[in-house]
Image (cartoon, rainbow over all chains, first blue to last red; front, side, top):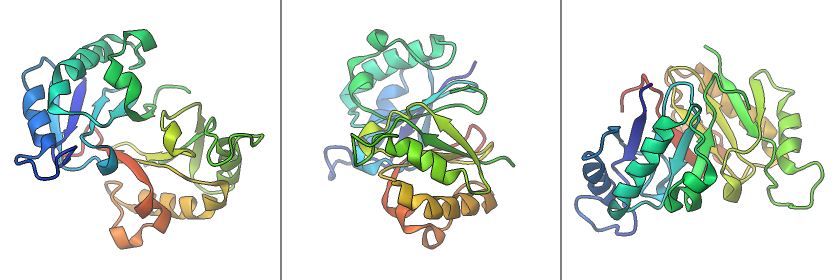
Length: 114
Length: 114
């Protein structure tokens, strides 16, 4: 099952003057992982940037905010656990701390019952 | 193309003591519209409740927060425009004001290119 890690490349994060933008820096940092990474121009979570999202067919989609390029290893760890879960819901205590603290929203798949 | 309006029924919104919860009230208010409404227990947007989301196969998913039961007519108006759009992206000036002001996040579909 293909898991995609969406990364908002237009997020300015905590440094509005950074060039490249922190979202683009985060995108580059995440490319080193095993997960499929896809840059997206604006996840409309600007007040919570840098924002990323995990999605896979049949799984809940999760959006996380307030990420920094330094969080890349923890994001990749969380993405691997997401990939290993049947429905995208990783047990709470197994989630990286940044995922527990900085979730912006989650959306069920069309197939997943509530 | 089936459009689903997800409504978080566990959101407490602006009144933590309301019974039923504001999310459940909003869910009930939206059931009168033409769109397929689906209650969901927690969209993990608790700090931005009440939260709703619009999703459809092949379209961007949009999550909105800070909704109230009184916003139901505007939400249904926005849902109809979303349904009429080819990719879920409604022209900015056509969006209800609450959708312009209170977007929490948007997520591309698996098929939509960025």
